[in-house]
Length: 166
Image (tube, rainbow, N blue to C red):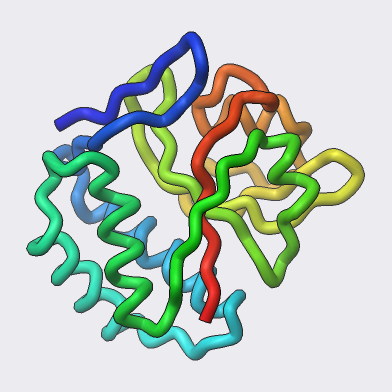
């Protein structure tokens, strides 16, 4: 199932297609779990995390709405994390994100590509996204550029971010 993205409101809707590159999704999901676990002050065990993600993939079919987010949430719970959601625009996210409380999002861009992003820090109205792929920017980005990266139509569109607590 392909995750649908509304170009009119930038919202992230149901499901996603992970069949084309499962190893990329698993790798990004592991990176998200690692960042969230370490930010929560817990020790990250990559073997246990990979096992938890594989179990979540067996438990949660790709046709289930928000499958990637649900899988990461289930895996995080087995690692001792509670995943919370926050409905925030990018501009709002920039006011609450800190290195100790990164915000993760599984986003679908208008071109149909889907992937994880982690907002790790903010300063002076700009934010930093974690490098989960070699092509990811390392620079501080303006709110509108972060919105483009995550597939939102602009920095004022509200999207669902994930954060973790021990």
